[in-house]
Image 1 (cartoon, helix red, strand yellow):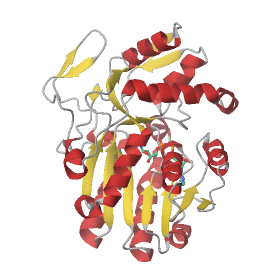
Image 2 (cartoon, rainbow, N blue to C red):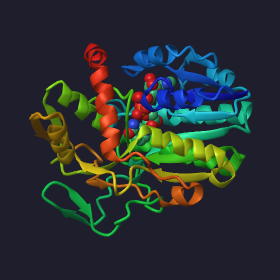
Image 3 (spheres, rainbow, N blue to C red):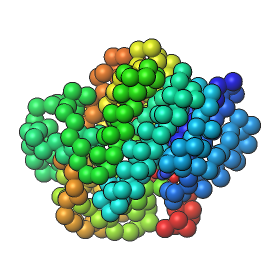
Image 4 (cartoon, helix red, strand yellow):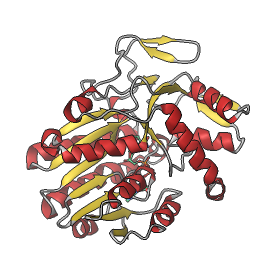
Length: 343
Ligand SMILES: NC(=O)c1ccc[n+]([C@@H]2O[C@H](COP(=O)([O-])OP(=O)(O)OC[C@H]3O[C@@H](n4cnc5c(N)ncnc54)[C@H](O)[C@@H]3O)[C@@H](O)[C@H]2O)c1
């Protein structure tokens, strides 16, 4: 039996990862989470309802080095998703953000080096490590910005430019994860993720904007937009992200020590205003919007160039934005009472 740890496994991406892994009977999955994010208890209730015999939940913090060493002992795979995830919160409390994202990741790497050096280590990094990309040539359209030169999106060759405490703490972690491959031979893979969305995402104004917009629209509440709303993101449905994680594990000899950008790519982009328009049409209602100042480090356009990952593993996003949004809208509608309860 494979011993698998999912840190942050009660969160949005984590619960989807755990569920996908639990379908294989010879995977023993440990969710390690401190339940600090609203909605995590609901996610745990949901996954517990399947009565998987191969699931264990451990309430724990990634800042607890001693506990991490006990938990990861003899593990085969680690999916490190636990994090302080909001740029806004990182600005309010940069020290806590650093301790969770940078120190916590280093503790986990070190625990793995000492207790399970052969384990595969998958890390969820972020496109925020590239900063605000203000040096790129950008064209302003009526409803969105366009990249003038990088038509296929941003690749891993882009310079690192940590911007915001969150960008810094995740960037530090990203570099440590990669370096543990070079220095200690740990089989690490870094995914620099664009916006991920899907079921079990209790998105709020600070993080998880696609789910947040869907929730606000369904509740008929006003949406605050920071900036002019023309900023563009590529969005990736969570099950496509999980397919990439699983492929990287399968092809670990090709993927270890590598860093991959991953997102919905050129075909799956929205500006904030375009998503609002799309939701107005789909839900058949007018959505009230108010504009505020830009947030620090916000990119005018981020579109992931997925070519490197595709070349190494054959991965491509399979769920287009319309299909993915339909799935998310249905999940929000089914869970609207829980969502109201959490507000
Ligand atoms: N969702 C996205 O669009 C996106 C994009 C880029 C990167 N990421 C990264 O993906 C990972 C998962 O993000 P998510 O969207 O599922 O967010 P999430 O907030 O739903 O999940 C994070 C989980 O980590 C847990 N956690 C927080 N601090 C912890 C600590 N100190 N110890 C243990 N557990 C702790 C939370 O309780 C939560 O369950 C994060 O590392 C995030 O930086 C997400």
